[in-house]
Length: 96
Image (cartoon, rainbow, N blue to C red; front, side, top):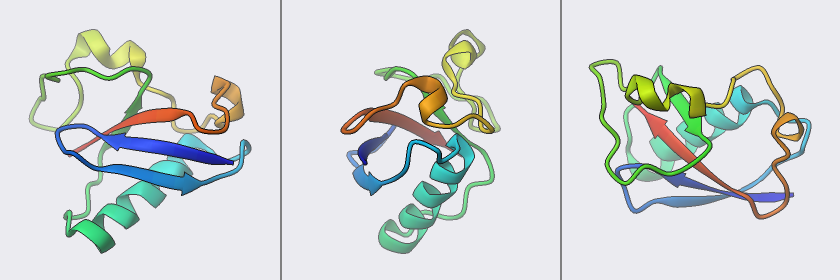
């Protein structure tokens, strides 16, 4: 299936071919690799997918969303299917 990943604090939206059995972590590392390869982003050890977009996320030194938004972060070990992510879904990606 195909999903779209919007990178917060940028105008980048990626189109990815994934499987519903892929984990959030695996998709995140794929996004990081694409950002590094195609856009020159430095490797980011910390990332999160958020269930919804935040117009102006408040960042901490480690690059995580403000604590009030942490409940909206998707858990890395879970699969896309666990979250009901379907074809042409949009995920919001934040990295540090």
